[in-house]
Length: 344
Image (cartoon, rainbow, N blue to C red; front, side, top):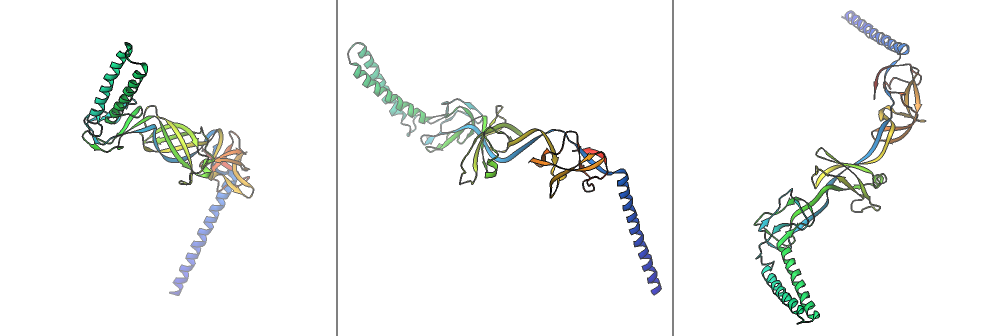
């Protein structure tokens, strides 16, 4: 029994030693291959590219001008003359109350106006014939203008007009609904342009300037625009700086009061060399990359500019130079390399 156990131990030991020698041989073979043929690497052939750095936010997008049509009196809505999506002119009648609405007092005001109107007409005839003085005529004319203004005010109460020209984006009432004074009946918005306000931190606001290009994206629709105003004082309520933006929406592709993704371009270089972060190494002397020079890896220190997921390289590389982007774990300065593919 002991003899069998000893034989098994010897066989196992020989197998382990054999595998170790085989692995060592294979390792030596790979090292020898790398020395003779070069370490296989993938390179990026450097070409100038456009490097853009952006800040991203979410914000409410609304029409450049937006206003509410509100009831001036309480009562029952008799007519709704518009629907959502209609374009209305300023002062166009959107909603009507009954002419006999108690709060409107149209009958009394209209009677008073007609009485003064008739009196003013008689006075004009008398003045033309020399029957009254100009002062008497002007006194009646003043009464006429006051009565006319009172009638117009009553009509505005009974006929709710559009506060601005634009599109009707929402209606809050239907015919026969009862409302109270100051209730908002509808919103009118000018949507050929959209506006947004974002809140930037102290670090972010230093990168944002008036006139910087921006985009707003909603529902696969992207609008172009720019920064129109940057606050110079922090809002204590938000602990941030208000930044206002405007975007072109000439085709009315974007709806009002939606949440959009806002991107502000803070930096752009049309002729930049860009390298992925993972391909830039560093040591005590700074940041470096490996280039291919005469079929060898050349450790090269570089100056880094801006960052947007990749690095903008300011100095250390030139156009058409080959930078190693794969195989970096094997290369070292002066190592022979073999380019197997061009990548980015």
